[in-house]
Length: 161
Image (cartoon, rainbow, N blue to C red; front, side, top):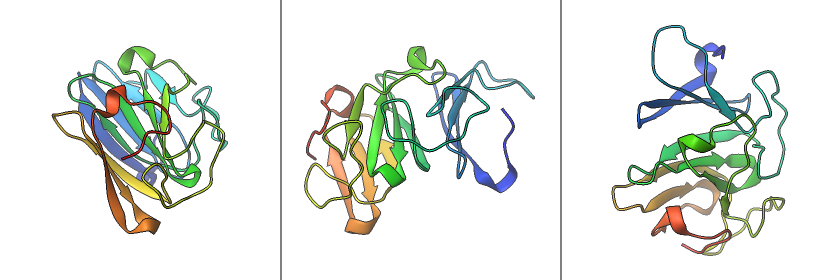
């Protein structure tokens, strides 16, 4: 996967996978095992390595802004900024091109995009972090807050903080 200079951010190193977030172009890719010059082994948010269209579904993203991995379960959390949500994938085994997320935080379903102000909604989320106890921390930029989702790897779609 070619990385376009300043538009790439190295996300997380977990379970010998390097997650790379390409800002402004859409996809999240993973590389394993790590070696110089190797291509990515999977992409989230796009059906393949040559697509970059934004979208709103369980398998698409619109301006991904952050990625985190639950250190216990290996589940992958991605900030889908312009869709006002966080998507959760089942971990490295789910890293097939264009695979759908299993859960969404910040929306009631995979096709809604409106920002909101409640314990179950987000408005321009920017970053995510999952701590050692499985708590998901989300910076909710336009609501000027940080949300805490306990046991995030087992929560259902639309869960409240």
